[in-house]
Image (tube, rainbow, N blue to C red; front, side, top):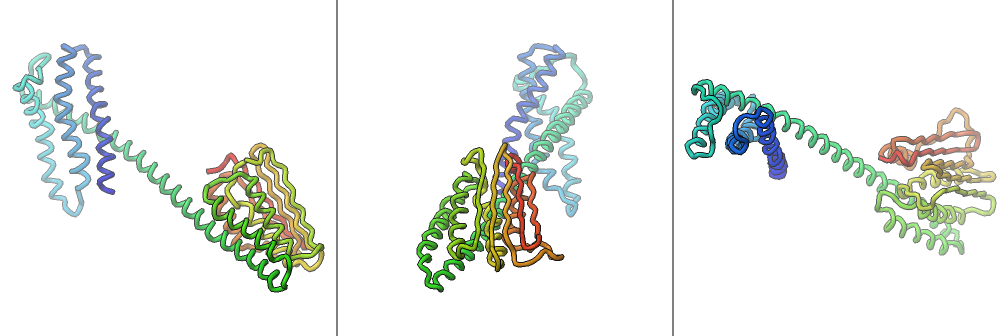
Length: 345
């Protein structure tokens, strides 16, 4: 991990050093001092020294400074002061000796030249430090954003791992009831369950899926539930969709449908019913599920179960503009889900 971080920091200097060099060249062009080709050679020679020095200071020396070892930092200061002043002057003199650096302009005394080079050094340190800080800040924000996305995805997967077995457990209970009663409908229920299992195993791994596929599974689930009841159970499932290929997170609507049967119809003694209506128009989803219940409204609040609580959390992670309302009335329970599909995270 540390090695990867060092590589990324090195990549910063791959373009930072040429940028620093180019700024100085442009400054020389604006001033119009001396031959441009000689200025380019001079700036290249100076940039080599100052860039290596800045890299050592910003990437190796400063990160290792610690309040626990203050003397090590104090000892390094004179060394860098020498390197940025007299050391820089000696580097310039070496270039002159090697005929790489060509003195231009009016000659000045050594102390004044060192002062000029010291100012050059301070400017370079500020430039490198500011750009490095901005670069690291952006990278840190990107890393934090990526970490947040990964954590949210992990939580979504966890919520699915809770909801899916919970859904299957309830479905198996239905089949068990039919088998215990030696019903001829048991084989058909197992067949429908196999379709649901196949869908959950092979079609729900991605983040989104066409709504028409989810509707087929809801149909199979409703048919599976209906096998348990006689003709007294009234079910109305209708939908109005602009596009059957509209994408939606897989099984997002299922908890509301399952809740209507498990906590509604199963507890209703007289004329049980479930009304389900789905509309998607202009990227706006409206899903209403009404079902009979065995209790009057009274002062009781709508029951909170794992399916509804998981659904709420999934909506928080998936969308920024949504509304989920549940209301307990006199022998009726209503769940209303509204989602602006374009607000997905």
